[in-house]
Amino acid sequence: MPIKMEIDHARRFVSVTADGRVVLQDVLDYFDRLVVDGGMPYPKLFDATGAKPQFSDDDMMVLGARASAYAEMEPRGPLALVGTTEEVTSLLRRFMNLGRGQRPVMLFGNTRNAREWLATFKDGE
Image 1: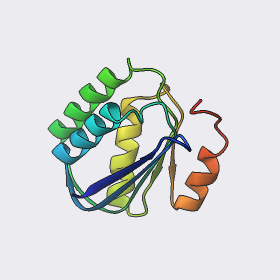
Image 2: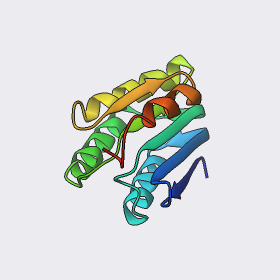
Image 3: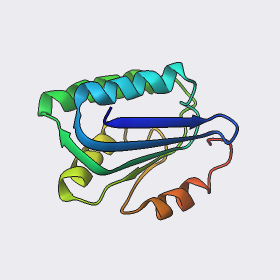
Image 4: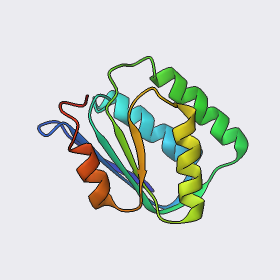
């Protein structure tokens, strides 16, 4: 599984790691697990530093539609995205633009800064 997710309900925090080849279905499966397992309102750290994304423009349209549907499921916690290569950061920026302004989302070059930013939010707000 290229996307691994851990939900810590006690800490109200979601940690996600994407590693290796990642395709649309991997992300859709992650979204579904996030909803079913109750992690939507929590702050999320999505570390894609090891990812090799394989997404077409059509895939991004599907992600946009799914993100729009999930936007109705408030509350949704802040999202810190982490990437280091141009390929990954470009894709993460495109994803950020899909839900512009609907919740706090930031892109970081390392997990330390991402965690510090997420720590500024209380109870997933």
